[in-house]
Image (cartoon, rainbow, N blue to C red; front, side, top):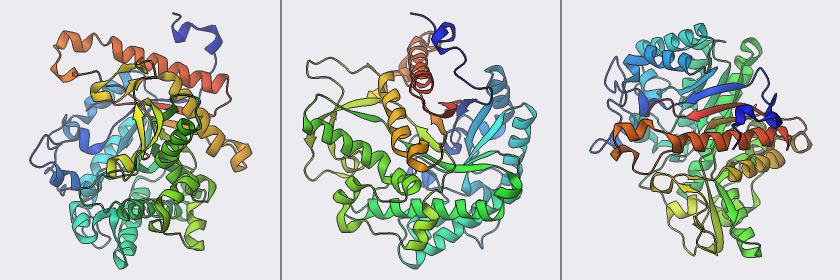
Length: 429
């Protein structure tokens, strides 16, 4: 097999402006959970009695070592998230600001720029201050609490835009956009939280565009997560199930943001539980992303079976049966830890083409919208139980990245998909 860096058919695919590097999330790497004024987040409470991020890999204190790793690996960009509870420990617009938290991220940004590494800043990656969970029921807020939550998020975003100025060139407001909870109402809560996340994102983007973008010249958007669902055969049932899964996982958020309309599949499933936005809110939502951030890991088959009365995880992942073997029992690809992911590079290429054809091509939106791969990565089966020697003999991960990067390059080179960056998951965890 020809190495992708030696394949003449791929030569020259990446422009000089293409960003490549790594992603991370604050709760999963920083540690320092009670250090320098940080307040508790929703994850501190949810994981307090189990394995958690209280110490993580201590990136809060070892961030200079992180930058040395990025330099050693030749990264040109680093996507990291900011801990809201480290900046405003109680979260609200009238709550005290923690200057030491602002200083930490400001120093990190300055040092990345000094190393010629572009900061790719995520404002919230699954986390929020615990106090806001208690005040508003988090992103599941209702009534007057919803408006208060939106104003608190706008205030948090405005503070970061103002403090960091034009130093970060790229912002994502939300990553993967969903918080898993133990008190959802399957009939209403999931859809309500989705609405709040979409509108909260759009309102914060509006703050940036109205107050900062013309002077700072940055770009701002959202990262959405999707593992591809492939029909197991050519049957109408399998094709319909695959479409349903991909629509629920990705179209639910992408259609409103990039097309300015509800996804028809999602609307048919949710029914009256999915409240419509007001005309004024639709105006904010439509076009509220300068790019399409995409998190992707693997692919499974859809059998065509629609799950009757799905539980919450089943509904969230599309409400259709998904399997990892074809009709002859052949695995779809190498199995990662607990089946997340399966190594299926061709599924990644299909997903990239679907995103391009549905949401980002100039023929759809009027202008070409770039895609950034904001997460893509592998975990080997029972890797944590392996010996150190086995872990560093990392052929499975190398095989995964080679296949997926080639799939991305061919989507760019042969299919005409506009992609401007690739950030592997994860630098550290």
